[in-house]
Length: 190
Image (tube, rainbow, N blue to C red; front, side, top):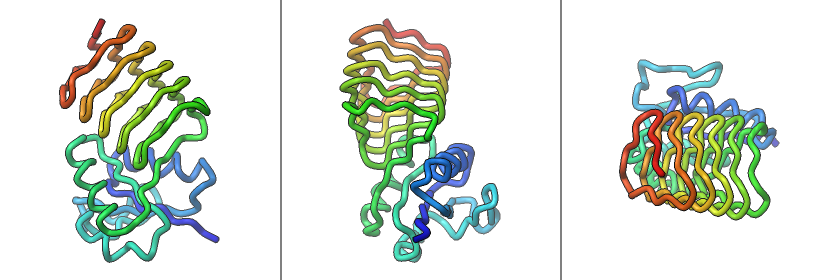
């Protein structure tokens, strides 16, 4: 059976999620919904079928969906649209990421190439762990948190809902990152 993944968002992150999904072997085809449609007709070699608010029209043509956009608030809105349309909300983990067997990855989350999710860590719903980010042991990421490329979180860090740590940021042990905060590239929270 060909399993088709519907991805909301055909930009850079969406294309990366498509590649990760296909490389994982769990999905054999992908298609996109994106706000840029009808101007955007294709992402990589896969079709852009319409705008995200048309998800109900495509619900019976896919086996799961994920919102793949970096903006935390938009990702939350699109995830809610997936759930309301009755499409299974799925997570995508790149086959070159490492996720501890004791970690919990929430629905709608994406873990990209080279990322590490350590022992007893918990990712909420709709979390992004970008390439080469490290989530050490006992870390908790709230719903719609976003870790940029190369972010490093030491053990016991707590990242609030919707917080965004951009590329190269790092947190020392047991740091708490407030919900809905933005920390620019290279931020150090200790």
